[in-house]
Length: 241
Image (cartoon, rainbow, N blue to C red; front, side, top):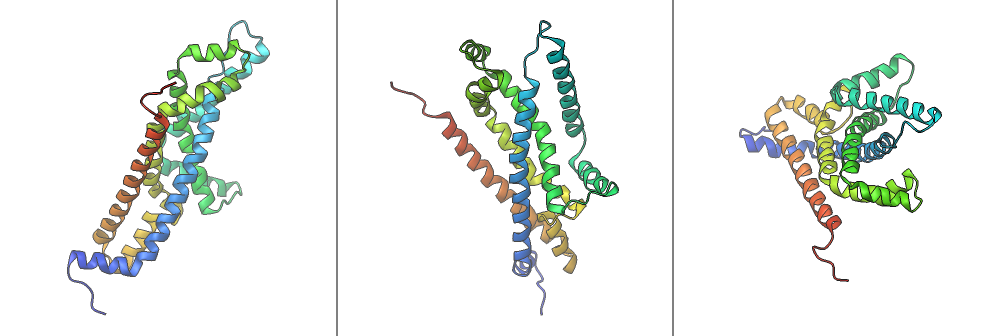
């Protein structure tokens, strides 16, 4: 078999030889990014709601003290996972689990790592969205007898989520790219598969040129789809009643 002699000849050759390998990596990358972002959003949503439960000095200590402790613990979680790199979190969670006898499947560990990392960022994003909603809306909901949870679910959160959609979309795009760090725990995502393909013929430049193009296509497509979703959520410019 005669090997190519030009850059684009190698690109074509590598795509023909390792196309299924690249596609497999893309599939795992998307599974981790989509599942991790959705789970992280739900986790962040729960954390944000819990951290915004109002307390007053007039409240009994049996309610006020547990809420303060819970808020402090959630604050620690947010600071730890926002203040450390995901690659370090992957090593600590995956290999740390092994030291105590917990051996997670690699894909499960990857989704867990992305979820808890994303949850920390989402918690602050969603909390910011909740704060951005006019206080009068929440007060009006309480005035008609809604609890904190009911006012959040039916009044505040629909508006908050619409306001923070660009930030949520940004987290999804970041997760597509940052899933590459999970190769340190041998997750068969796109970057890991690219290293395997590059090692056979030692054509690292050509392989990672292909990889960069694939990541660009993924993030570009996701960004455009999310912008379309944002426009749908905004609704019509004018409403005639």
